[in-house]
Length: 309
Image (tube, rainbow, N blue to C red; front, side, top):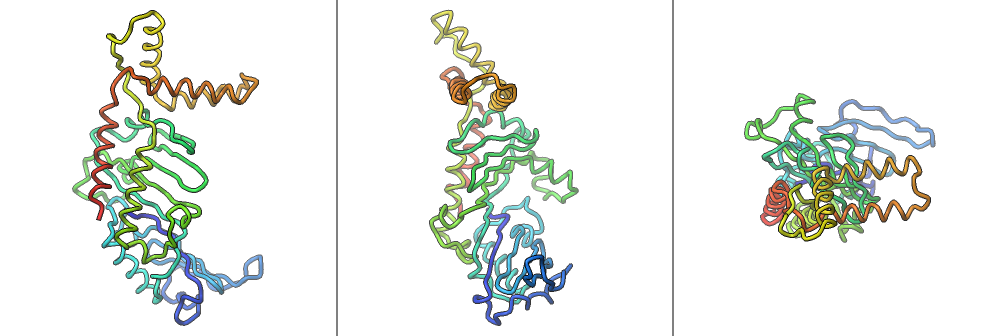
């Protein structure tokens, strides 16, 4: 379930005490030179990783999954994480088990009945996150410490001419990534090193966090409403408007709010907040049933978290 894993190891944790000692094992090496701050630096590549080196530390940025499995369409599970860290260590001729993890992406794909973009209108707001659909194929939820991304992995892979495993060749591939990008130790309540990643209790806890983050995204209803609940003209109008709004989805509300702000239509910022809250209430009104597409995702992600090992 781990993809991008960025690492930092200090000179004190390298047995020879020489950070530049890994240079012979890298490709595309930029030899040691002084940067604009007068610090001696170098860099190079190994598998999917780029190594940035100075006198005191080595920074490794890349995909642990791609380095070990050759792509990130497959899922890197806990037992393979240990092997992947050992492979990196062997290739660099240093022990990376004590290296600090500075970024961690938790992710997998699920084959879905429909293209991933069909699911996004039913994924609404999430507390303390900003919802942003940057392209028809990609949906983000952002805050200052972590990021959630949903995207069409099959479409991305085909656009980049990546090989797709035969088991997934004809499937819609829905990718869900939870990216810990800042203050990782505080968020995960642990001093996260490379060896921590394959600790069973830690691994299961992170996968549970991954599932819980999805659970707290507002799930929207489909566009049907129950006529038996309508008893007044106002109720009929509200039900019809809510149904149409639910059909348009969260992105439609975001677009309208952004247009109103750009045109400076209201005098008070709180007016935009109130309007968003009112419209969001309609998105989750009692009219309609939870979209079958959301139930499909919830079942798949629950099963992944339940049986993570």
